[in-house]
Each structure stands twice: as C-alpha cells, then as structure tokens.
Image 1 (cartoon, helix red, strand yellow):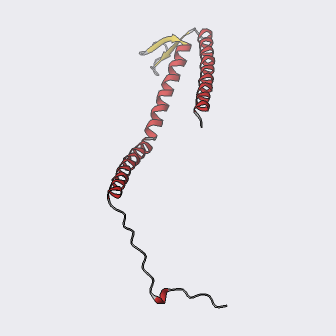
Image 2 (cartoon, one colour):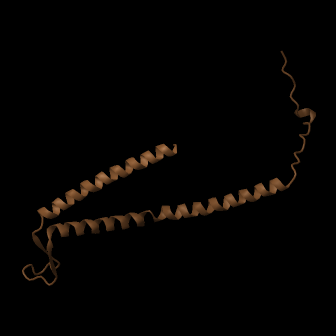
Image 3 (cartoon, rainbow, N blue to C red):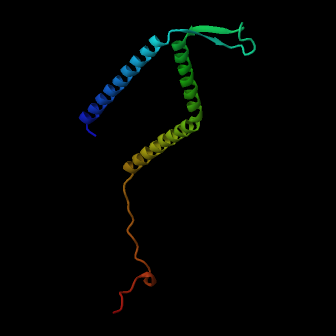
Length: 134
C-alpha cells in the first residue's frame, strides 16, 4: 500500500471516528437532560424505608457510572483471559530475537571464511544408471 493510500485511509478513519463520537456525545447529552430526576440507590436489602447505606443522585449519572463500571469489568476480564496469548507472544519475540542474532553470527562467519565447495565424487559403478533399453 502506498503512503498516499495509507494517509487517505487514516484520514477517513479519523473522520468516521469523529462522526461516531459527536453522535454519541449528542445522544449522551440528550439522555442527561431528559433524565435529571434524583433516584435513591440503596445498598441495604433489609430496611427499604431507612437504608443504612444509600446514595441520591440523578438517573443519568447512575446510568453513566454503571456503564463505566461495566466497561472496566469487561476490559479487566478480557485482559486476564488474554494473558496466555501475551505470554506466548513474549516468548516468541525472545525466540525470534535469539534466532536473528544466531543468523547474523552465521552470516558473519560465512563472510569471513573462504568458500570451499567440494567437488562431487563420481558414484561407484554399481550405482550408475544404465541407459534404457529400447
């Protein structure tokens, strides 16, 4: 891919991301304006009238906080699940680095040593192929 095509794709990706973010922002602001009433979040399952631990906050704030908590929990679970693949990738990177160093060492020794290719010896008489009989 040429540099011009890559930069055009990057520009298009930025424009699409900007449109998505602006649309999401407008929807989020409209949701916040429409849901300003206060709600009580109780953490006491035994006493609903006088809870020991409760929080009063606007509904939109509760929804946004719960979305953020959900994203953090989902991201953490995904990160933990992919630990095996990250470990494998690190091991393969180490192997690749070691093999590249070994290849460079072989190239250096091959360049320094003269090339002596032995001439192929004639095979014994019994191993020579005879021409086909017609």
